[in-house]
Image (cartoon, rainbow, N blue to C red):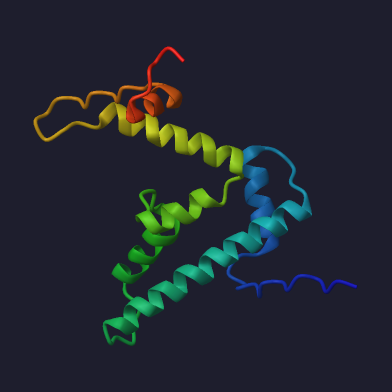
Length: 146
């Protein structure tokens, strides 16, 4: 028998009634309890991550107080950042299935091919493409008409 997944400890910062009332007021739609629970769980996870990051930043500066700059940096890291460093970008890309990875790879190769320029500013000439058989014959000095 499987154990149920461990539930994240709620922060208690937001209340279920407040969330459901806000959604009703903002959208004019009803909201299910499981949707509110999911919202609260994800929001609590973000709150915990931001507070932990702000704490680490404050302690790195040898302060006992979390300042506005710490919270701003933590929010930027966890919520607003769009441009990821290459290693985090790679982790995000690798999460995709193999078919999507092939499409991503092709798109990257196409972009590089379009934007690659030599140091002189001219576009690189494409390689001459021949058949493997023809190249093999040329390399051994065999006649082409075989």
